[in-house]
Length: 553
Image (tube, rainbow, N blue to C red; front, side):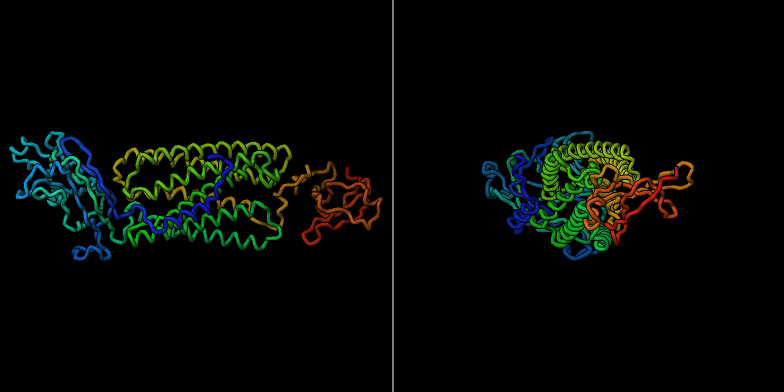
């Protein structure tokens, strides 16, 4: 994509939302369309889904759809074999083919197949059958010692020469919290080419949200309130000093608003998902787009603040196009990653496609970090040269906060790598929501720090940019040798000029950029006639003629 196209993310999200609002993304309702079985060992299998499920709140499950029940329900699951396979049997024959639905909790995974029999076979062989260990044509399952019905097996047979068979609609109640996997399997090579259609419904006790995602709905609710509180505090400060606001304050306001909208969209999207079991694609795309825009704008805000925008430079100058291009590329990469994560398969594991989308986002994040700290270094150097005490202290606090956040980010990335490497089968699914929640909390904390450091105040020029080379010397103490007094330098504003009524000669009198005061506010003697500006909020451009004799030194 060429940079000059610059698509508007909001308009793009609106267009896609309107076009796709009536369609639904993958959800806790797992749908199968002509799914093919994959050969493995001496079996053929199709992965029907995997989710973390909590145990049912009710012991006696009489109505699976009622609140408090956790279950996996099979609805209109149909198997179709090839004509060649069906023609091998006569109409009078019964049970001419077997397909099994196997539901297993991850801790019982070793009970599927013949590993405990020292064989790699998944389906029962003639040798094992002769030893009365299993039945030929069936998947080898070793019953659990705690519950002989688990792992769960549901058998569906083809009859005669029919090409199609349908599972009985039924629900498997979940009485134990865990990560559950569903596989459809058959052992007969003659059934090769069989396809599956239909759907399964997975439900937790309090809704259809998968176990990994359920805590996030509560988290997004709290984050929405947190952004609302931050926005309220910022709004009150903004209104109080609205006459003294800087351009940077509007950028911060935009980030707060985006964060508030993002958290609210995710909360309502998860709430709808939890109630219906489906994700309307339009709502999800809105939430994804707000998330991508907010991430992009937040990173751009950190970058321009680090460059000293509004403090040591009035504009970004020639690098504006590069900053905008980086933001555009990051938005596209982040949007693609979010779409795959939230509109793809709802199974509680990540596909290979996600890996190829994570890498560009990670590289772009690294680019932002390098550029931000490089810009901070240059900004601090400029402030040190100008001896701008107030601004230097401001940026040192900002740099320290940013450095701590980077260290926390690196440590958390290391934890994520360790977490994923040691938990490939999602056995720790109940804690996985913390991984994604951390980044939202860190982003919120950084935004809060920026709001505190750059909060609107009655004296915004203290941190604002000025073309005056000496404007950075606000409130600096200047000792006078032998006088015992400390003098304070007050800035001259280029926007305030002497009144023409004072006369031509006076207008061209020597104007000093700094007027010296003693701590007792008495005029320090000066050698020339000058115009003294009283810096005051009520009279910012008041001038008084003073005549002093410089004798302090």
